[in-house]
Image (cartoon, rainbow, N blue to C red; front, side, top):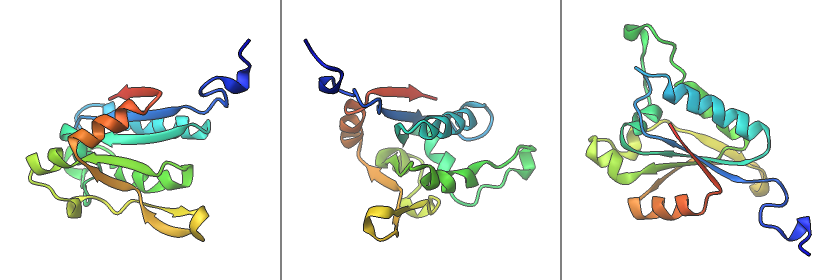
Length: 144
């Protein structure tokens, strides 16, 4: 008979990947994704985000939403480290296809308690093939 301790994921912690493919404004998807990420993190799950396609625009620095009459929620990404959300994967090809580089992205960091609270970058630029491997390692993938 298998005991609870022998089962994969028996500790209750699962790996959740939130996939963001849409531009930050014009639909509710980006904001809803961010809210669900914060909820998952509050329940001590292993939470990470992936940015593909127009989703890369969600973490571009210098967003100004005054002209569209919507609240700019992009500063919230900087608080993710406080919730132990420290892995934000950005597809390199999606950046390049949109004429963007890593320098165009917000400076999102976290303090690594295992390294004397050193500040480290949360954004990790990965290739499409690396993203496939990251996705395969998740227990749950939610797409927005």
